[in-house]
Image (cartoon, rainbow, N blue to C red):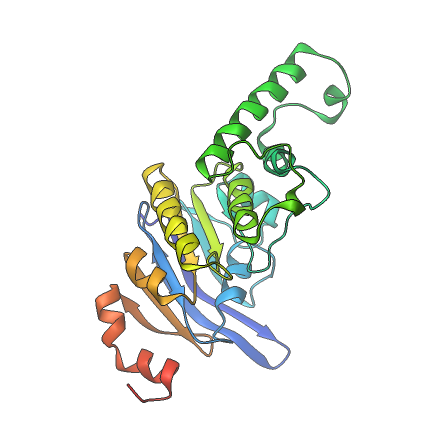
Length: 253
């Protein structure tokens, strides 16, 4: 059974069909790339997968459970996390506080309990802080937990958003253009981080325009154009696919 199964996923905006019966699967432990020209429907597809948009048709199944119709917070609790193309951090909070926000779904402490100085509450806070510091080390932000999130460099903010998503303890992590705005060294470090996430048992699904990253990192690639899947396969196959070349280059190789 695939970790993620997308079945005939469809989305209309008025009379415009942004996603047209898209189907693909993600196997546990693989790194899958979702690519295509601007306007191909990639981010809309992500928004359908994590529940930010309701589908016009089709289904999203995670680890055998149909998520179609569930809100994003329910999907997150079931092991699906994501980052965004445009960084979405809490700028007025510290780096560590941004990480700790991701733990709220897993807390076994009620709202009223959290207001009381109970031993259970204190233990939960200590455990969350310890885990948060571990995640900062993982994403390369060790020692920066007390800094304002908005003071971080752009590439560090990208890493912080990944760290916050990891606080949800996801099975599947949707990364929407994680290399956008990064320099070559930062992109290389990002590739190493995504590989490390795979080793830790997290399955990444990546939207990316950086073909160096996609071809060097992904086990398989799914290509969208005008909302449809036009190709699927290993990087070496996608690189030679005529439909893919035409979609990106207008038919000129």
